Length: 166
Image (cartoon, rainbow, N blue to C red; front, side, top):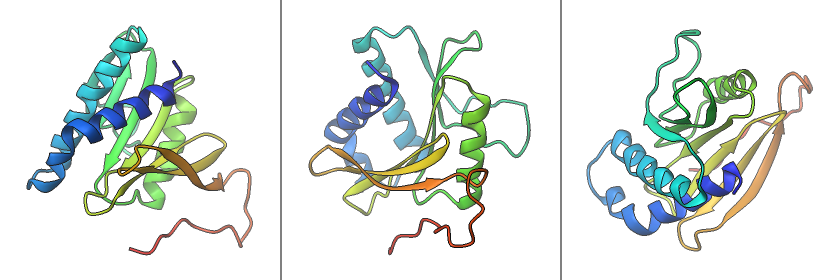
């Protein structure tokens, strides 16, 4: 099973089992923990031999964002890193997520905006381009909504920034 498929499977399980957390006055850590538990189950089902830990700090730089959820082998091999927010990731956080992805070869680095007040979550995938994907809470499906080239590839003044109406 591919890394992204494992993540989507965990999101589906999270939405069907833990959506009550959106209605309680909880913080982002509670949502992240519930998602981490679902990721652990999805990994077990896929047969992947990784561990799921939360907020594993890395000391490379103070600028690098710390993933809220890290899936790794605890020997330095990283499988997946997820940065979670309740709202949109800032432009700076998206750049740091891309930098983290470049430094973590083979590791799927994702951003996730929970948006408790909306009927979808926003997933940011990284690489040569940032893909923005909606994960629908109603249908439990994921669809790409936008692609933005990284700053290294395009320095065009007309490159659009990602902004949605709130």
